[in-house]
Image (cartoon, helix red, strand yellow):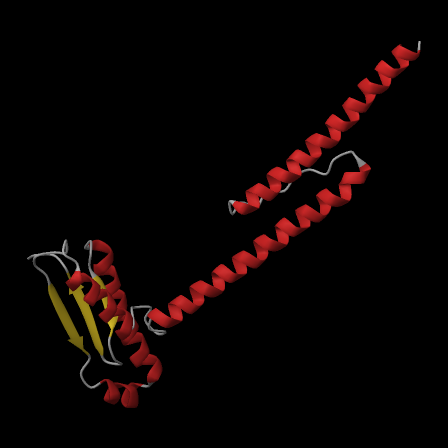
Length: 174
């Protein structure tokens, strides 16, 4: 009888340990998913002792996801501020010149190409006579036309070099 009771106790003990082990394995997998940049949450187990651990891990995963998404948004905002013209969204002078320099230094770059420079003559007069809002809409319209072209022609890029100067790089022949 004592052997049967010992056998049953061992069976029940292994079931309980197996149940706890599965929960702990899910928690370990959750930690590994964080290492891979994935944000996995798991269901809370029926084991009361491990519910707090699972709840804390899930909470940490959600919080880390929010922090990383916030930082990614912040980095993208800073990148845009550093490389783009605020009004038009085109590359600013520094970024455009960097792209052009990179293109010219590439050994496998295009054999032919061209640059179109566009200047809005009398922009200061337009600002004075029509107002900044109208002049800004004119500049934005020009920028949109340049952006539309760069989206259609592979390898092209554009930028706003100064208030009234724009550039369009055409790294293709013809």
